[in-house]
Structure formats: structure tokens, C-alpha cells
Amino acid sequence: MPDAAPPAGLLDRLHALLGPRGLLTEPGDIAPHLSDWRGLYRGAALAVARPADAAEVAAVVRLCAEGGTPITVQGGNTSMVGGATPDESGRHLVLSLARLNRIRDLDPVDMTMTAEAGVVLKAAQVAAAEAGCLFPLSLGAEGTATVGGVLSTNAGGNTTVRYGNARELMLGLEVVLPDGSLWNGLRRLRKDNTGYALRHLFVGAEGTLGIVTAAVLRMFPRARDTALAFCAVADEEAALALFRRFRDRDEGAVRAFEYMSGAGVDFAVRHIEGVTLPVAARADHYVLVDLASSRPDAGLREMAEAVLFEAMEAGLVLDAALAESEAQAQRIWRIREEHPEAQKREGASVKNDVSVPVSKVPEMIRRCSAALRELVPGSRPVPFGHIGDGNIHMNLEQPEGMDPAAFLARSHDIMDCVNAVVRDLGGSFSAEHGIGRLKTGMMADWRGGAELAAMQAIKAALDPRGIMNPGRVLP
Ligand code: MLT
Ligand code: ZN
Image (tube, rainbow, N blue to C red):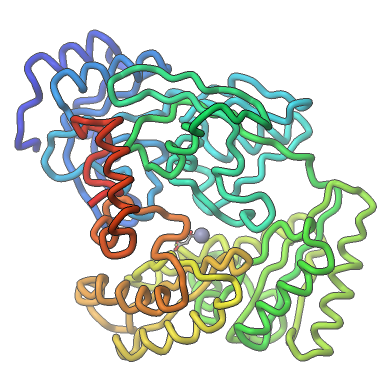
């Protein structure tokens, strides 16, 4: 239960503004908004506001600004770092954008989609496809994650290697600022050099500077030729060498290039129904190569066969399976997509979403794996992810039979162990999941000095009362 009373009359005023559909106060109704899917955080809240449009969001923020009520902004609540979970004080109002779920405009000439913050990522993809286009951002949580959330965290995912992060897919934004004013920056321009690029401030700010209520997103031509290969490769270096071979052959065709360790694939086969190994024998290292082109005659399958044949001759690839149908391609993708779920079912795990220069990935995986095994004897490193972006999820699974709580108690030692290697290789301690509540303590160490001081100055200028997602991002 909240340990602090809300400012007098706040809930009544919110109720008058939003009506019964727009304000949840019953414990059973607000419970799903108080914890994260990883089970790392359980918070409390005054209530959950569910405004129906941007004007209502602005009005809610104005009411909160008057009394200094902190706001936790929530999209699909799929944060990996506790970014969308209120703290334990019970003083926060959770502001859910779920009802802002309209696609306001879709233009196949401009190749843009104007979508509200609560549109689920999958729904944005489907809307683009129905218009004969592609909205390429794709990640495991796409059935639940929302447009506002993926922009606020500058999500990456599986197609960054070809289309960039969420930031690169955004042309304009509509944002409610911490004083409750509504900024309409929904411009759909490819060129717009008119002062500070304010829109970019809000991407990756995790709701600490304002609330994204809608965005103009870039669309692309849809794929008319595709090919997908699942390969067992000799080692980490071979995985990177294969990436270079595909990239050098046809950079624009590499839609995704994902690395998986033997352990991660074993877990997926063991725990996820319908997942089977597409190649004949188990290996310690695998990659998934997803090729796509808008040219119907791109000949991607032949290209993939040629590259894989040469890579086998060179000893890089041990075995490979090419998908024979779209259904098989989807089955193969599940091996990779279900990694987080499979890891969860195997036991407790600690996530390390890190990046290094692409050339350093093999060294990073080797050094981190060795250091982690030494730190927690019997633990099982599960590196996987977006090798083409230099972003590997250097996750660690608990030793078999160990008490999960005892393993998780070592989370920060485990993260520090990985981060030491990552820092030495010129990398980042958060590649695509953001800072949330989990990593605020690392900011001073990694981004201290002038960089953090500038971030704090921006925060103080836009949100002087500190009501927007306090406790996230900045220490
Ligand atoms: C993914 O790419 O599947 C997630 O970002 C990784 C994770 O769960 O660690
Ligand atoms: Zn990822």
C-alpha cells in the first residue's frame, strides 16, 4: 500500500478528467502495472491513469506538475531494466499509454506512418504490411512492446544491422513536456535543420524528459525476395568472418545476423515446444542469417548457397540449413527469439546487454565467458544476439542445482565482471535495453564528468521538479 497520501484532491480531479475507464485504483486492477516481466521489481502506486489521447496526457501531467506528483510512464511494460515499474514509495502515478493506440496516418509515398505511443509494435508492422510497405523494427517483445516504449528506449532488436535503431526510424515526435505543455513535432521531413534536433532528446531518454505520445515513423519497401540460413560455425571468429562475407557480398540484403551459443540453443530445444535443431549435429556456436531484398529477382537463395559453400570450404561453417518455406523460416527464428524465455525456464539468469566494436566481439565473448566461469564456478555463459551490431547479450545462467536467490544475489558482481572486459575493449554497458532502474548506479562511473553534467543540466532545464520517471537513467 502507498506509504504517502496523494496531494489533496488529486485522485478526484483525475477521476473527473479521465472517467472510470481512464483511472484504475482497485488493487487488482493496478497490480499488473506494478511489476516487471523479469520479476526484478515490485512497486506501488497511487493509481494508474489511462488517458485516451494526447490532450488528456497533457492534462494529467499538468495536474501532477501542480502538486509535484512523480509519474512513472508505461508502454507495454516489457523493460529489461525496470524502466517502467514504479518504485516502492507508493507516491507515483503510473501513466499508461495503452489507450493511445491509433495509427493516425500512413503514407506510402512519403513512406511514413504516424502512430500513437500505445500502438503495439506488431500492430505497426502489420499496418505497414497492409499498405504494401515494411516497418522494420523487430524484437522478441514486439507483441507487447509499444511504439512509445521502443522510441523512449531507442530499442535496437534484430534488424538494426540493416535499418538502424529506433532513433533512425523516427522523423518526428509529439511530446507532452513535464509542465504539461504539448509539443507537436510530427513533421515528416527527411531534411529539417532548424536548430537543436529536439526530437532526438526524447528518444532514449526513457521518459525522463517528457512523454512521447505519437511519432512519425519511417517505412521501407517490403521484401519481395528472402532467404534464411541457420548455420553451425567453428567458433566466434568464424561467426564474425561469415558476417563479413555476407556483408561484403550484398550489404543491403543482410536484414539480420544473429549469433547463438551452443548453450542457448540447447536451452531453447529443451524448454520451448516445437523448437528443434535444424542442422544434423550439435555445435558450440551458431548463426542465423536473414536476407531480404525489395527486388523480386535478387537471387538471395543462390547467393546464400554460394557464400555458405565457400565458407564451408574455408572451414568457417560446419553445417547449414536453408529454410525451404516461410513457415520453416519462422520456426528457425523461434530458436533465437525464444532465448530469453528458454533461459528463464532453465533457471535464474543475469542479463548483460553490452556492445563493443564489431571487430572485438569474438574476444569479448571469450574473455567474458572465461571470467564468468571463474567468478561463479559451474555457471553457464549464454552469449547471443546481434553480432552484426557488436551487441551481444552476455547473459549468465546459474549453475545447475544452485539456489536461484543465491545466484541472483551476485548479479552486480556478474555485471561488473562483464563490464570490466567491455570497458577494456571500448564498449558500452548498455547497448539496447537502456538504463532504467537497474543501471543508474553505473552512470557516474561510465558517463561521469562533462557528459553526465550535461545530461543533468538538460534534465533540470526541462523537468525542474523532477516528476518525470524519477529514479530512471540519472543517478
Ligand atoms: C533479445 O535480443 O532477445 C533480448 O534483447 C535479450 C535478452 O533477453 O537478454
Ligand atoms: Zn537484443
